[in-house]
Image (cartoon, rainbow over all chains, first blue to last red; front, side, top):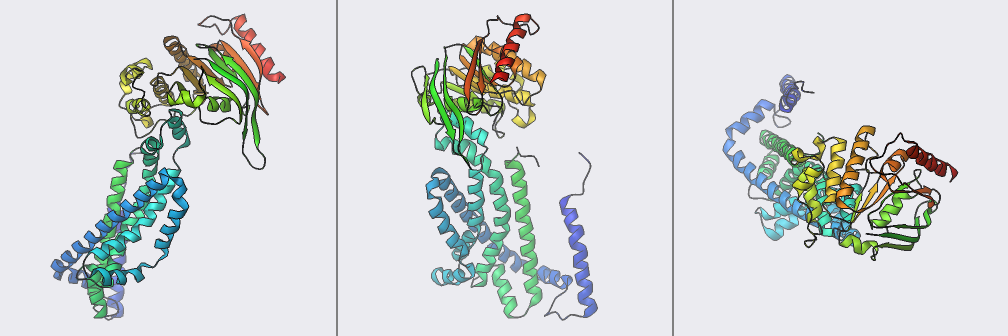
Length: 251
Length: 248
């Protein structure tokens, strides 16, 4: 049981590093022009030379992603709890949620920019809209798949709906909520970037758009690297939090 | 608390055809009696308990706990129901699980024992702050037992509570229940499919037959406790129940 295993980050590095080296070698061997595909070393040096502006842009994008995710979480959990208490509302509410879910965000994002300007607010709203659906669907199925034996026990005490929700349904839904977060966390970054792409005064999406229109690929890839790293960071934090919160499930 | 059931029938909606689980069951259990309900699986004995515990509504027939229908008795937490699964909340310690039974639908005018006293009663004082997943199956059922005691109910409905445990643990827990029954002086309806267990525990044994469930024999157990399982009187009753189960 206690056999030592290489840590996950070392394992990930062992996979990623050879891929990067291969990428570097191919680009050099074929002498691919920089405006088609820059080599990893060129990307990393771009990143290092512009560390300040990338740092600033990352903070903006991460902030938008976090606030948007918080918004999506609150909306998703709130609606799921509402439907947990009043199941009759489920069909109407889910129709509405699916309507929002199936509207392409790429179409709404420019509209929100026109209405609300180039600031962070439209990005937070887009991120919220993108992240709330996985949270709602998972949380709801978590609330509905509470352990029947536990529910029977609470019912045999004549517990009211609120007591059942608080003591059994919500704790039973927590593993489902974390499954949703693993989807919604990285999705929040995509939401923020997509929203920035349609017009922003700052952020990684803005940098990517500028780099793309100037065909400055090292700049574009540097932002992609940062986003990938941030996505992994989000995911790692969620996994750590899950271990702490849902301590009773066998890992 | 007296249990009185008259002409109780119950049918489950099921596909392809509804299942008739109980057909005109009538029984009276006087206050303080330890009664057992025995029968093969699927004979409707769990249904009787779930109806008494208010977890199901009967299709027809009457149930009274003293003078109240089950929902009234449940609302006052006069009935403790316990099943094969301990159904402890895994995110709560043993003590918190017990206290939850007191906090949910609280009955402040009826004083019950404290969680520490209850843990003492089931011999788990040292495990108050342990989570269920660190307890053995037998210990989990002890916690569930303490949780039922926390209701300070007048009726214990026990649906094969120890059936998933090994023989030795099951026997020792059954003796615990007898000891606690002597302390609390409640009415017990104990569902089982184990003949020896029923004769070991009960004052009276009702034998049920399936499809649809009905009570087929009602046998008194006039033995004093503790009971000697090798005595001829004990074995005679075992034989009598076995014959009743075979006869159907």
